[in-house]
Image 1 (tube, rainbow, N blue to C red):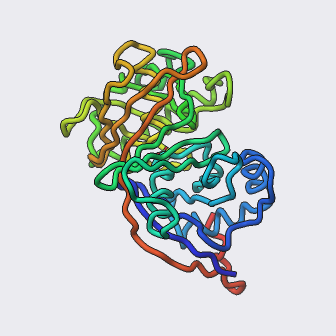
Image 2: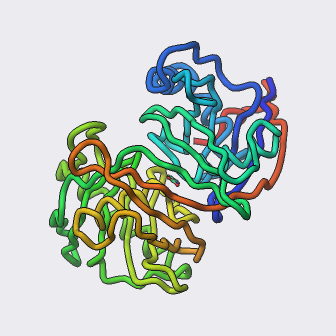
Image 3: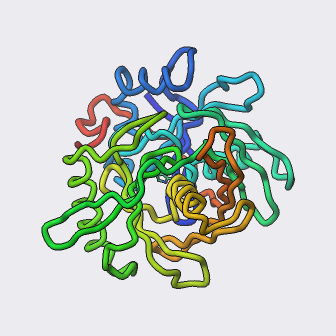
Length: 315
Ligand code: PYC
């Protein structure tokens, strides 16, 4: 069995788009197909994403036919632990990949609509290779939730940006790349404590906090720097687009960023996304637009040799 894949990175964070040989998930909504992927084809996710072919930082995108008649394609994102709701860096990677294949325009101003398990998103082509993703409606559901740890008390905002985020500013750490090991341990402790205490996201898409986002002052001319811990234990090399969406929801709720104003979010490696928001149709929601760049890094055929005991990954 072989699978054709195109790899890219978006501001440092990798995406592997499966362009041929993906699972047959039938029809139905993308949310239904994502459930089928988890229940029947998880071995294909693990084969593509996990070592020895992938790594814990890799996000894969499985292209599907569109769910809505007005959309260009459907996409399901997966990582080293399962299906992701939405993934903005991955969407930018998918658009760059479709451009590379000649299946999407490179003309500034053109748009591409993609269906995801948590709703449709629109990507607009901008000059200089920038892709602007209009994300799903985002919102903050809890403000300054106390999270006691054994050595400190932190406070978390819980917000939806396509995944559930705990956003923390009073963590007391400096956000430097060299300190990523320490930051990973702290963010993991915060997530464990919040999940154990049932400090969840509520309302539509209610669920446990799966990403932890530590915030700090900018180091490189942006408005803020983040360190984002992803569900499978890896940190996001990009500023995390769904995390930046969650941050914009918090800034909007606090009156710290006006509608239409630009927020430059730095990642822990110093790469950047820019974000703006407009009011959503539901009270208390915003529609974020996150912009960034992706580059193609490779094209490959993945072979799943039946004699290879690790063809479905190491786990
Ligand atoms: O950019 O939304 C994102 C994302 C989610 C997980 C990793 N990157």
